Image (cartoon, rainbow, N blue to C red; front, side, top):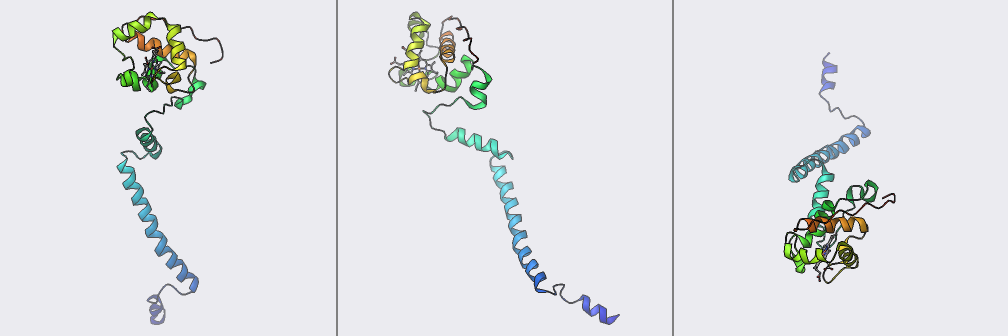
Length: 172
Ligand code: HEC
């Protein structure tokens, strides 16, 4: 009995292989622990454990001011965007504030003059761009129909009562 007892008090590591396993584990286990803790802390800092939405939020915050992309969320595949969507995503950057002397949404006098020229004229002008206004409001993938809708939306929020243009018959 006493002979086997004395064996139990020996180190459980008896072969070089076991020694290697123990050494490797003693490095790997704390590292995994550190990684898990780091993830927990970083996740908490973003206020969301979903890192893809945190990245999106970050991209949103640091995206260049002049670059406008409203094709997220399907773009053409989900059909033409409404005037409201376009205005919020693209035009409001300048037209909500009147930046660079853009006719401000809600400035009925400024828009009254524009509306008097007719939607077709405004559309042609918006397609080309005018002064500080970039061609198509800076939205490369916008259709003429969407652009017209956005103009109607802004005009009608500024005392106008323009009619939405008819949707084009094409697949869009
Ligand atoms: C980078 C700023 C900016 C953005 C973005 C912008 N605009 Fe403008 N827009 C302007 C400025 C500045 C003017 C005034 C141009 C002038 O009269 O010289 C203007 C003028 C216009 C006019 C009147 C053009 C004319 O012939 O007088 C229309 C219509 C218009 N914008 C529509 C839009 C629409 C629709 C969008 C979104 C798709 C948009 N804009 C996005 C700056 C912008």
